[in-house]
Length: 161
Image (cartoon, rainbow, N blue to C red; front, side):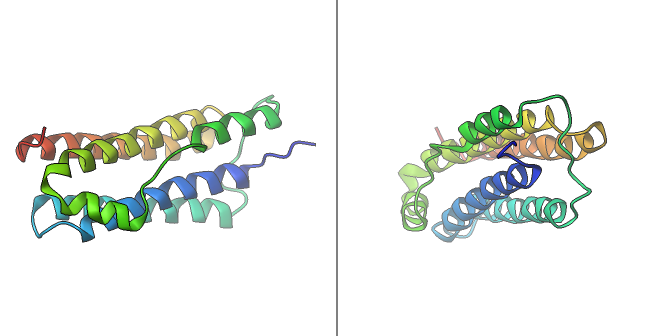
């Protein structure tokens, strides 16, 4: 019997979004009022919205359906490997990182990396869900891509290297 389930896939997605929320909200708390602070507050709110999407999937068991003739133990190991070893700064480290103007480049670099990792996880999860659920996962992928575009644009506008 497989030890991996759609609930675990959903919980992993929730964890990813929660870690992103923690980083963005703590980074925003360490920034002065301005474009960067507003962007990180918006990104934090987006992560909360994504958490709600996945909690709704989890709470309505007929929603996200994993599909295909897969060895679910193997799929579980693979999806877990995408989330293991992710290193997020503590709340205090995120605040300190954001407080130092010379490290704003690092805040942007880390935020873009978070979004890339989210895209990878959701892209891979999309390969294992039923056809009817693919549009929802693709919408989340598209949103993560839009987050990267916003981060890159703001980084350029602010002249952050």
